[in-house]
Length: 200
Image 1 (cartoon, rainbow, N blue to C red):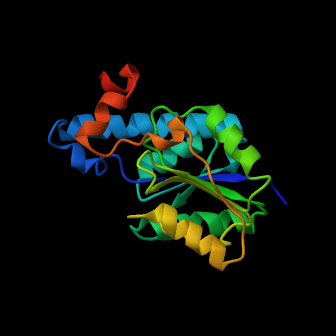
Image 2 (cartoon, rainbow, N blue to C red; image 1 turned 90 degrees about the vertical axis):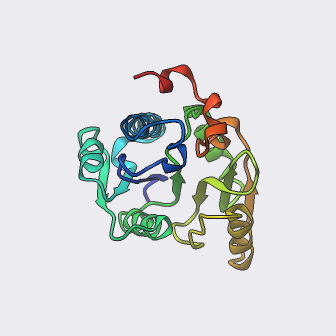
C-alpha cells in the first residue's frame, strides 16, 4: 500500500470567495484564490511527494498548475465538494493509497508541521478531523482506509463526520491546530491573513 495521499479540491479561482465581494473586487478575489491554492499545494508537497497530491477541479488552469508542480490533476465530474472528494479519494484508493487527507485550500496560516502532527495523530485513530475555529465545520479530514466514511462537508460537518465514523465502527479524533482552523470565508476573517496574502 502506498502512504497517505493528499486531496485538494479547488474551485475555479474566478468563482471562489464570493462572500468577500463586499470588500474585494472580482480580480482581487481571483488573485487571492490563486495564492491560497499555491500555498496549500506547496505545503502538501513538502509533506508527501507531489505524485501523492491529487488536485481535483473544474478549472483547466488549476489542473495545469498542479501538473506543472508534479501533482496529479483530476477533472472534477460535477460541482459538488463532497462528490469531488469522493472522486479524488477513489482515485487515490485505486492507486494503492492507505489513507487520504482532504484539505481545504483557504488556510493562510497552515504550515507543514500542522500536517505532520495530524499524520502522527492518525497512527492512533482511523479518522482524524481538523475543525474550523468555530469547532463546527471541517477544514481537513484524514480517513484510513480511503472512503471508509462518506464526505459530509457543509454545515456542522464536524459532528457529521464524527457520527459517520462511529456508525462505521472506526476510531476518531478531533485535532485542533490554529493553522488548520483558520479559514477565510467572511470579511471579518480577513484580518487573520498574513500580509503576504493581502498585497497585489
